[in-house]
Length: 148
Image (cartoon, rainbow, N blue to C red; front, side):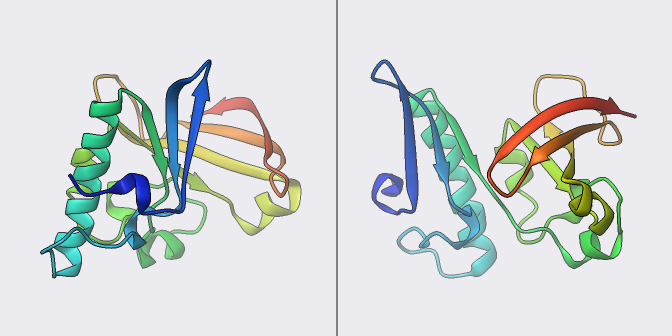
């Protein structure tokens, strides 16, 4: 298996010594697995390896991915499957993917809007949003309302 544990930047979180989840700072820019040359194949291989990591370690893996140019032109819209760049198969490898939209007006108020883009084994609506408020700069969000 590709050595994600040494690929960094990588953070592990434990509860009483048991690994609970991993945070990987932006999966799409991790070094590609050996032998994978094409950019889109690299993205697919990375996301497949992240899925395998979560299954083998029985833990949550958290990362970020790039939104497409369309996401920036759909100002204020909820993020959907069409809004992600790179290989679309990454959506098939995740158990859940959240979209986050922060408009200029939202940023001034300290708001962010979350929605499910993909949620395996559960009902969801891309249009339903969860409103987060708080000090986003210092990472202290408070989920306050469901919209939609």
